Amino acid sequence: MKINRNITSKSMNKGITLIALVITIIVLLILVGITIASLTGENGLLSRATEAREETERAQEKEQIDLAVIASYGKDGTIDLELLASNLSKIAGITNESGEAITSETAITLPYKVKYTATGNVYTIDADGNVTKDGSDDDDDVGDLPTTAETAPWLPTDATPTCTDWDEGITVIDDNDNEWVWIVVPKSVTDGIAAIGEEENPTGSALENKLKEYAATVVTNRGSFKDELYSQEQTGLTPEQYTAKKRAMLNSIKTNGGFWIGKYEAGTENYRASGNKGNTSTHRPLIQKDKYPYTYVTCAEAEGLAETLTTGLGGTGSLMFGTQWDLVMAYIKNNTNPQLDVNNSTTWGNHKDSTLTITNTNAKGWINPSDSSPTWNAVTEKAQNSRVLLTTGASDDTNVLNICDIAGNVWEWTLEYSSSSSNPCTERGGSYYSIGTSSNYPATGRYSCIISGSGYLNGFRPSLY
Image (cartoon, rainbow, N blue to C red; front, side):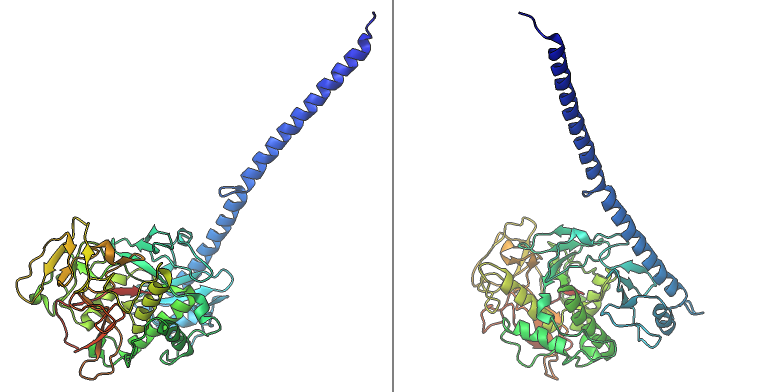
């Protein structure tokens, strides 16, 4: 039988051509995939181009503010605030943090925040004339913190996130090793409520009332206590300073959907005995675990120390206002499962009737404290019907959403006024001495005290906003 070799050769050539075509298509697809990958993705050219554009925008924005600050120094070497307002007003597309126009008549106090409308970037001008972008130390690190439609934590200057799990509690540590936890106040609470202007009195404002109304669904024992200044002696603040801080606090909560507080009660490396009354210069305040509570401090002294702990972090610092404390209670109530009873904190605070397990090997306790003979020893438990003052973060039983010892241990000073001229200062949260029930100073508890009040029951916790 004869074979048609020409037909066979042609068929083979067609087969080879088809294989070559398939291989060519596969190679082209691979090259296309490589090209797309190089353009897109986290490290793609398009992403890098976007990042480069944003970095350039930030650099240009910061440079404009830097130049305005430099041009505002007077002959005495200090910043002329009126001149600063005038120079800032000349920058196109810039407003104050609340979105209001800056004019040459705008009253400025440092630190002062400005915002670019187009990018939403916020920058802080501190008392030394330094300009930093909120949420970073000139780098955009704010992406390291999770955000939602209801809350957007801002990263304090030079701080590093240490927990980004909402269920555990968002925390950061600053460059002084102090730790902070984010308190969520849903932005939806203040929807439709205007921010408070620079010249407006925040007391009685729609914004303050809305936040108080939200917290009142959880905190049921506010009574006649209020966020008003009784005297400069009470908190160490002038009426102008008190008003400015209160305004900044309320506006910051509206803008960011929350605020920072110390993870622990303020502490110190070495215990402050009764002889330390009136002297805060020899003990450095710390917000760290395993420290002795910073006691024997008045409300005014505590406010000054709170400012020391928050200086350089890119926001405004102070003791908590009463409304802030109530918002912390609402945050705890609404974000724990099962929901904790903040009006009866015996089961999760260091109170007289609390039973605590202490697995922290560095924890120390002072049994039945008094003004004399402080004796701190290692502790492994805290039994019911016993009074024990503990070092910070001693028991995981008192850690809720990464907020430690907010219930019991020591009373914590706030900027609230008790409406009592003889006892105008206010402490919150109960202590190791209280029972912690609804009728005996639980986590929500309030206690009025004299201006000179300063003992082993008195401590504090700073806030940052």
